[in-house]
Length: 377
Image (cartoon, rainbow, N blue to C red; front, side, top):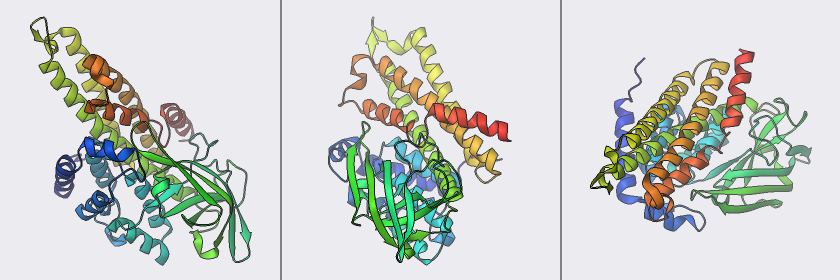
C-alpha cells in the first residue's frame, strides 16, 4: 500500500500551510483567543475558500475529498500552525449529517462547506467518561415534536455555533447503544443555555444545558433510536483529525527544539553537541514517528471492519497521547526556563498537544477500549 499523499492532498497541504504561515501567525491566534468566538470569521471563510472544509466531505455531498487521508491532510496542516477555529466541530457535525442524509442534512452540509454555518456536535456529557453510548439526556415525544432535557459538556466552539446536533436518549438505559437519537437545535431555542469558556490551549468550548427544549418533528435527524453507528463513525473521523493535528504540532515542536539545541551555547559550544541531549532528542524523534505510523494505520483501517477500525483508532489516539506527553515535557526541559513563557511559540504548541489527549478519549480510555475490542474480536 502506498502511504504517500496524493498530488491533490499535497497541493492542499502546501496551500494551507502557506496560508497559515502568511495570514494566521500565532500572535493573531493569541489575540483572538480571549474573546468569543475565539477565531477570525474572515479567516474562517478564507479557509473554506481554500477547500479546508470541503476536503473533509465526499464529492457527492458537495465536498472535494472525504477520505480519511484527506481529513488527516487538512488537520495536520492546521496542527502545524496551531490554528484555532471550529474545524473539529464542523467535521463531527458534518459527518453526522452526511450519514443521516436527506434534503435538510444536505443543505446544512453545504452551508458548512461554504463556511456559512457553524454547527456544533453536542454529545459528550459530564458523566459519560468518553463512553459513546452513555447518554442521560432524554428526548420524549411531545405535541408535534420532541422535548429534550439534559446537559452536554466540552462542546467544541459551542458558543460560536448557529445550531447544535444534540444526542439524546429516546429509549433504553443510559449506557445502551440502542435508543440514541440525534436532533438539530438552533442556538436561540428557548430552554437552551450555553456557557462558553476558554481552554488552556487557546481553543474554546461550551457547556450546553437543555431545560425542556421543544423542537418540531422535522428536527429529528435519521431514524429514532438508531444514531449510535452515526455517532461512532463521526467520532472515528474526529479521532483521525485530532491525531493528525497532533502529528503536525509535534513536527513543529521537534523543529523548534532542534533549532534551539543548535543555537544555544554553553561552555563555548552548541548544547546540541552534548551526547546526553542528543539521546533525549533521538527519543523524541522515535516517539513522533511512532505516532505518525499509528495515524497512518488508522487511516488505512478506517474503511475496514468495525472492530479493526475502532482498534486502530484507539491505538492511534493512545500512541499520540503518550507521544505528546513525553515530547511536550522534554521540549520544555530542553528549552530551559523559557520553555513555558507565553512569548515563546513553543508554549502554545505544548498546551495544544496536552489538550488533544483530553478530546474524544484520553490515553487511559483508549487503552482500555483497545483491550476490550481485542477480546471481542
